[in-house]
Image (cartoon, rainbow, N blue to C red; front, side):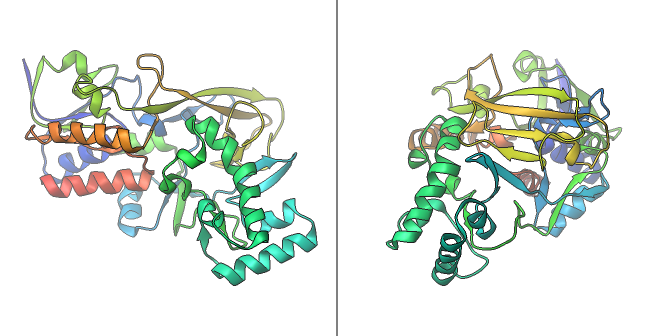
Length: 371
């Protein structure tokens, strides 16, 4: 029976933060395991044969308003500053998203765009973001028209593809993530700090795990070794329902499939990410060379196909939040509370849809709790 002081399940960002903090601050040994063949979890990136750095599991742009998180990660990487701009392919043209005042003029005649712009600013003020579902409750006929246009052209079909349900069935918190922006700021995020690790995310995580006190074992599923190892503390970032062998039933997730291909052209699209709400079975195409401004004669793109999660066949990417899944998750939380020294956190362990900023913040908070 192997004995370890600290066992971390998952070598993604959440696991790497905890492992690094325990090793550097507490000077304690840590064993990190991951069932995949690589570290860095879903932020894993690697060099394509073209020389372009490819984000294997979809585009990742780090963004935060919290200086302490920015400074913490900056000890493990230098940065390539990147301010994301996203288009949607709507009615055979590129339209800025989140839908904003510039978008009005991209899709409507000038007289109508100006009228809608004036009404939006008068009603909400300049620089605010309005959830589309809130806008749909407007009594003004013009603003109702705008709300239904944005809902149908930008949100409805995209959400049906992404989540398998209508936006009307989704939690408004999820829908609020992509609002109508009453401004001319085309940036997808508004955070002070926005960048991508200059040598890639994998190298950043590698630097976090680079300690004589940290041992990493890949291709090592927890369920295969859990009866062969003893630990004082367990930090579990895998699916919480899987840990308990689905005792109360499986939690619902959505999954993704990626089709990546090299194109014989310098650029394929006008920016890193283009959404396809209404056309094709994929939701978006990512062109990887934009992220680090890499130069090459060809380019590499990835199309993203949402799909139902099937245990053992694909990856659980996004928790599906609704009343029944919340109740089921709470039952697992209550079981977890009976296990001293075992901590569930991260996207899967905490059954939460979170950004990289939120993942790092949660891991740092957990370390403060246990140290």
